[in-house]
Image 1 (cartoon, one colour):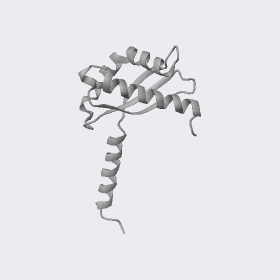
Image 2: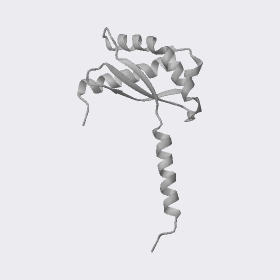
Image 3: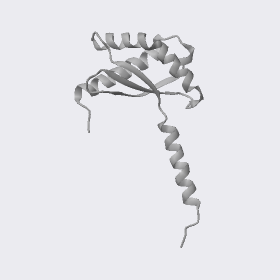
Image 4: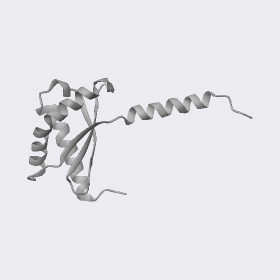
Length: 120
């Protein structure tokens, strides 16, 4: 089901604002090279789940990156509230975007299956 237009607009603005803040306004070295891949927000605009990845596609730093984002959460919420012109920004949850790893795993399994001899 497609998101309501307002929810979609808020989702995009939150993604853009957090990505911009990470790239230009936060000085935490743990956040260098972090991408915001998606934002999902509930219909009540109270909770936003922010999916992130590192530019290197290396998930070994995921815990460190998520800790950095969690420590920056109050500042990011303030930036989001200012950008959206609202008093109270949605609560932010940060999650590692593991879609790439899952896709690669499925492709590897399909490749493995295709190499197996077929039973007659």
